[in-house]
Length: 214
Ligand SMILES: CCCNc1ncnc2c1ncn2[C@@H]1O[C@H](/C=C/CNC(=O)c2cc(-c3ccc(F)cc3)cc(O)c2O)[C@H](C)[C@H]1O
Ligand SMILES: [Mg+2]
Image (cartoon, rainbow, N blue to C red; front, side):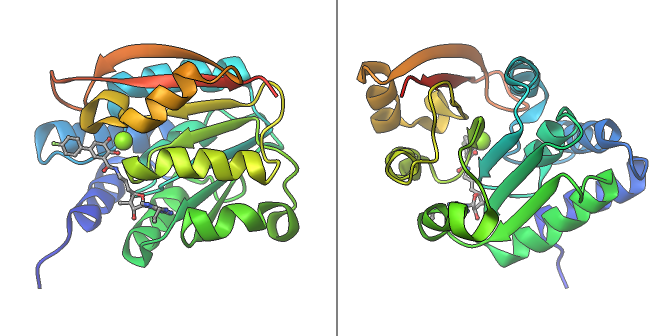
């Protein structure tokens, strides 16, 4: 039977990356997606911006919305300090199965908690079920029309504190117009656009970093 693209990405990791070496996992996925078949990972160019924001925030708690194959999950977790935790939400069980194996290959199971389910259902349960107070960093990379409702939901659930950083992928392509308008016009956020390109292409895209002001 035909394999799926996520299965082929996992295969590329298992063939080309070293177990326990997160950066080799990231490199293997980028090489596969650049040379064999495109996939919607944040990629190497925007990934460098992601790395710099993660390093600057040096977060103890991270939330990722939209795991997919786990590329950005591994990329972020590889930069976290020893006791930091990353919770990543994925509602498609097929992708979750792949992402768990990519995370395991990178040897990052102890830093990453992959939770299967929809963000709208899980965000309200973060405090009681996962013992989270607030998130220092949130990486938004799920359905683009869910960035704004989920951001409002995180505010309502008290998951953002003064200084929490939201980093959103794809604010140009495919685009997240309502979210962008909101974070750029709201007095409760300080936003900054990092111009880049859509993963593995020359098309413009970028990341929007928004600091919650409380
Ligand atoms: C109600 C559910 C919401 N809550 C949810 N809760 C949990 N998990 C969720 C939720 N909503 C979605 N997910 C999961 O996250 C993933 C979804 C990721 C979505 N990403 C894109 O669509 C994209 C497109 C392009 C692109 C650019 C140019 C092109 F030509 C084509 C494609 C590029 C990019 O970098 C992109 O990230 C995964 C597939 C999906 O199962
Ligand atoms: Mg994306």
